[in-house]
Structure formats: C-alpha cells, structure tokens
Amino acid sequence: MTAELISGTAISKEIKAELKEEVAAFTEKYGFAPHITVILVGDNPASASYVGMKEKTAKKL
Image 1: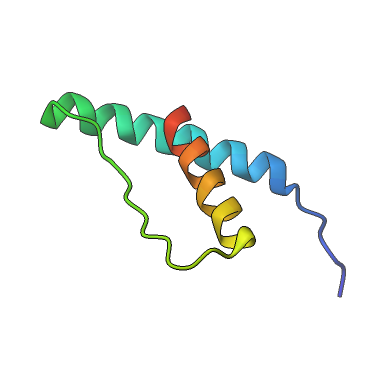
Image 2 (image 1 turned 30 degrees about the vertical axis):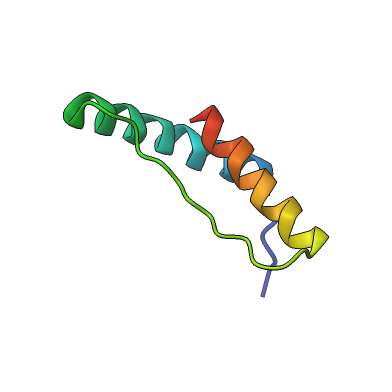
C-alpha cells in the first residue's frame, strides 16, 4: 500500500473558498449574513483559543 501525502493547507483554502461563495449566496438570497454563536463554558485556555480561531475565520467569510 502506498501512502498519499495531502496538503491540509490547500484543502483548507479550498473549503474556505467554497464556503465564502455559499455565504455570499445565502446573504443575497435572504438579505442577511449567517451568524455563528459559541457558548464557552469554563476558562480553559485551549478552548478559548479554539473559539477565537473560529471567530477569526468566520469574520473572513
């Protein structure tokens, strides 16, 4: 069996580009942009970092 090397960065860019198009279509169709809401329970720094990354990505879309 041969292993196949994949580029996570390239796949991520592809997914984000597709999602950006879907967000634009949604916004045009319904007149408002979709939103993401996250409830963070506790004060785990790793969880806060994860949520921060999600917020940053969502703002770019």
